[in-house]
Every structure is written in structure tokens, then in C-alpha cells.
Figure 1 (cartoon, rainbow, N blue to C red):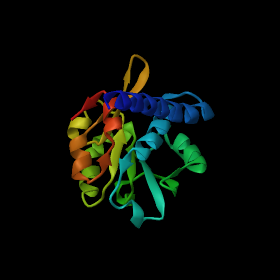
Figure 2: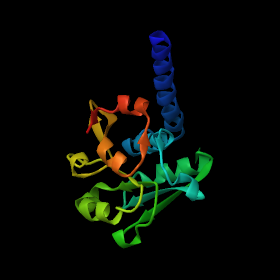
Figure 3: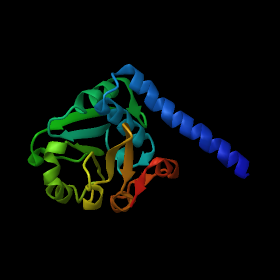
Figure 4: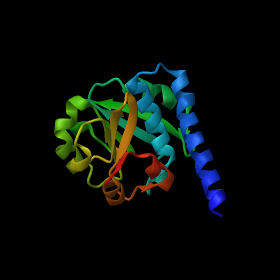
Length: 177
């Protein structure tokens, strides 16, 4: 039985890596493009309780940053649970609405507490790349280790937002709190 579990894990990891590599090969290899591919893969391994209530899978980007274009490219080619992916860029917290994923640009991360307060009634996964923000309530944080994009997960925040995470995805995180 353990042998089958190990084989499954290997195939899962290979599939996770190659699904990101497939998207990565379609866009240039900047860190923003890689992060965009990771976000798509995160969405495949997370489960939202309210996903069936919406027509689209909504990703919102707060502020100006390079991740917007890769996310828009992915949204044109892929779906999440059969739902069309819509990507919206907003500049003000007042524009924030219900969404499945909110990416907060590094330039807007100082507003994290206000953003999290605004999202209290939604099951939104917040993502950024900001040192120390995982401990401040961010759901997923990108980090660069040895020139490679990695990620940290705040499982407590995901649980609070009733978003279920695959145990396989947890195994790939460099930090889990």
C-alpha cells in the first residue's frame, strides 16, 4: 500500500511540475510569469465552498504589477473546474469585490490589514510576495530561494476562509503556518 502511495506522490509531483512547465513554456520565464503559472496550479488544488455559486472563477489583482499580463494570458487558455477565469485589475480597495483569488502587488502590501478586513465575509485566497506577510494574514506568499520561485502557505487563514487545500500542495510548500 505504501508503495502505491509513493508512486502516486511521484506522479502527482511530476504532473504539478509539468502543468506549470507547460504554462511556463507559453510565456517568457520571468518571475511574474512563473508566479502566474503557480497561481493557476494553486487554484487546481484548492476547493472553495462558494465556487458553484459563481459563473466565473474570479482573480483580482490589486495595484500595478507584472503578474497581471501572465494571469490574463492563462485566463484565455484555461478554466478552473470548468469555469471561465476572469482577471480584473483594481487600483483602490473600494473597488474590491467577491473573488476567489486576490493578488496584492508589492507596492500595495502596506494596506494588507485593510484588505483582509474588507475580505472578512468572503472566501478569498490572498497571495503576494512579501517578506513576513504570511504571519500578517496572507494566505499564500511567494519567496525566491536559490533563484527559484517557491511558496509558503498560511493554512490557518485558508481554514478560516473555509478554503480546503490538497495535502499534496502542502507538501510542496517551503513553510506552512
